[in-house]
Length: 117
Length: 113
Image 1 (cartoon, rainbow over the protein chains, first blue to last red):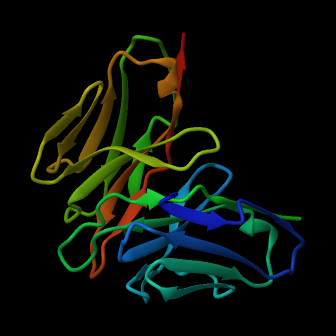
Image 2 (image 1 turned 90 degrees about the vertical axis):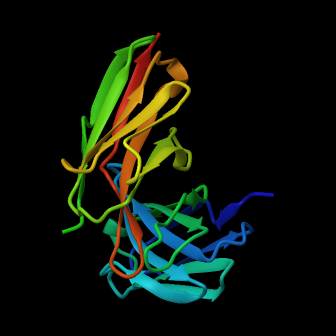
């Protein structure tokens, strides 16, 4: 009954490869996010989807492509992996969005640790 | 720009002491300020939050204060315990169509028995 689940938890791959991380939430939330946490623990927003629509794109390299097939799922595909992509990627969801409304609590998944060799 | 600054980056206290972490934000329109705790190898989890219509909020040993004029907010933990050891993140909600949470750089709190 995990609220926000990500797969895989660990991913080790070579430079230049393409990889995907999947995320699913069973909380009925409309909004989902991808955050990147680097080795210094800094949490940086990458993307956000609201009801399958991309609403936030934080000038992430276009090697990163999010996809939301439905509002319960948000996947992240990364092409041509680079050393600097090594990080923990957190998926999150929140129940509220829209003009004048704040995000409310973010519910994070367990994270996917990506190591690029 | 959208910025949240957090201090200190590390904090070491003795069990039973108080700990204070401070954050400042750049957008005067920000209206939501949560605090997250991240234990080693775990996900960030919300511990307390405050909205701009309130100046202070308390939940047992933790409290958050907000000064909208100065654009800063603080987390106070009293009677610290070893299990409070973790990285704490402040965040502020930035508007512009759709809101997003921008996080501070984190404070690593160590509580020594």
